[in-house]
Length: 510
Image (cartoon, rainbow, N blue to C red; front, top):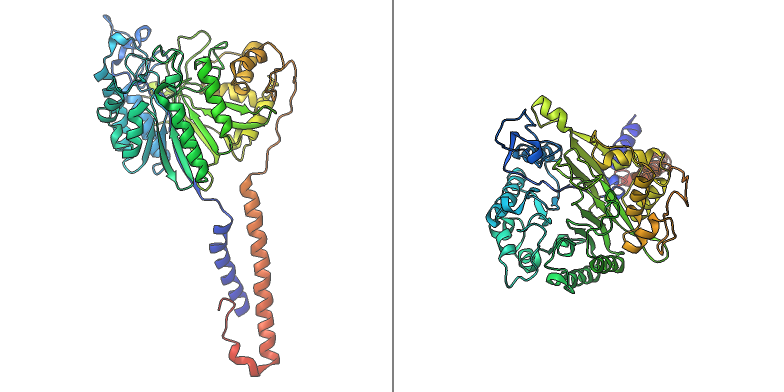
């Protein structure tokens, strides 16, 4: 009996201390984007006029928003409160811009822009007072919209964001100094992980101010230096920005960057693909991803595009609305690799009927629906390969999630399917055009359904943590065997050699 008790005690100690050598140091962070806060929203407003109050009264168009309109304050606070309720103590929050509504410039002025962005900033800070916030600007955040200033000698815009929108309270002194140069900065999440917040709105093809510049606000030079510095110090890098490179999957070939900037940006990402572990963007309001490849067709980088908080139905042909959404990541603090993310959403129709905005639900978990144990370029490439079959269950899930379960999402025909595939895998504009025409691109990992009509669904992979668990259990069994063997040997020695009894009080841990 004494032997049994001693064995149980040793096993307990092993289970307490052993897992620390086998489990990962895991953290969580939020990614939220495209609030598009409209202070003029009215529940009695006109849906054909962004739900602004008209001459006549309308039926209640929604306390928490309307699919034809941008976010009322009730929706903004509902989303941020949901973040706190689900995960109140994240390591940090990433906010990828666009807090100003989709309204004419005549309805705005610089002070109102600062106020709208500042209100959202204050709400995030008040709900998460002890959490680091990493914000970047969106293309609707300057005044006029889309015209992001590049000449800091002649504009007070970035200084206004820091002071009037209160970003100097969430960014450090060094980050604020860089931000003043053009809306970008670099920050150290930890000794092993660096975050670079970019102002990719400078490359947006609606920005007339930056069209002919070699390097707007010297941001590309800044990015190069930061990546060189990260590589020198063996740091992994997160890149966050609002506008992504590549082609919009719903826009019939609609691109975001000026062609020369798209090329330069992709080249820089490829050059440092070995240290860039995650890229996060907003802007499209849809839920999608991108995979970048090298010249040999090897997946080297990935981009995750998060859907918006605003439910606004885009005016672009073929692009619909979405349910409001927020995204929670789990990541490895040691190397920065994202393990998974969980997408949460608010059913806007149900919320307005119930009159409450606290019913945020889990939409999906990448580790469940896509059988991904980590979010890496090669794994997302395999997922994209499964999408080449339009009837594939995974692609059908992706379509539903693309609009955050919006009821107006229509059936995706062959042309629609092709645009999704090519947008995901061909970020270079020429390669995208070749892809949708059925040709072979210079980066050829995933072509159209004409070339790969029936890719098999990826088989569920054994999660990485299982290997640690199995290894840990094997070690426990082995050490338990040693404990039992040593104790039996010690007992045998007591019986056979009493003259060594003075050593009997020494335990295995002495």
